[in-house]
Image (cartoon, rainbow, N blue to C red; front, side, top):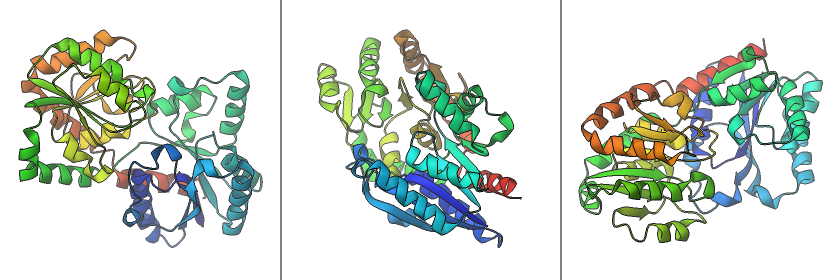
Length: 377
């Protein structure tokens, strides 16, 4: 039986690691084979963030368009996907989300021919602001699916709100390469480079890693940090994006706010190593895998309730805090708690390591394979 996964972007490193683990499992089972169709190299907004690392893609794949998604017309994409599915003749299809009708419509066509479909979904009610017409279409599409790989509790909440039975959720997990990230983190912390770079920052720091875009809510993070009026803590903002100059201007009067350039995913621990607490203040974030990355490095996390991962990975007061991004006083309270209780942060970081241990690529891959087998019996 052939499992066909249709995934939007080849550069998505965390999926590459999960698919590689899945491929290893399938290789041990003579009844199944895997093929992954990567539609594009990357989305245009991330074109310059990091180069393609082909070495992490250890699974059978094909890239349909070796360009960004915006450069290919809807009809061209629809036709190419339909032809590819037909040529592969899969026993089951896994698609990502309900937004791309060029993927959804051909998949539903083959479902009418008897091929089950599983949808991977990261959307949440927080970022589902459609009108009655679009919600009707979403409900219709979701109703055509045979199963779901949900990225967490909030994604499951969304699809069940649209009438999907809870038993159709085959996976409720999302993962990064914890082992690799932790190894890089520890190695770097013990290096001379770390010691030298640490001289650039205060002894203790909060950190954000990601794109500088409006929904990350970074201007409010800077303003809230400024209210702490602490000289012993710094705020590191690592990344790039359209708001970079605006954010730098916002922080120009603050001596302990630092801007760092983005690094490839496998070097993100080099940034995290210089901080004590990770902060993700987004007003909209389906999941936020950087929370996984920070926890894999043994860090406490402060995460907005608008981030899907907050509701799966954060236990209030144990490994971090959850706050309402529309109430700056909550974020300020969480930051101040860390400043006043810095002696408790190491223990919270250890709790993060324990909690993230069940969110690994190998576990997600096994859950996916079990789901595929359930629907192809």
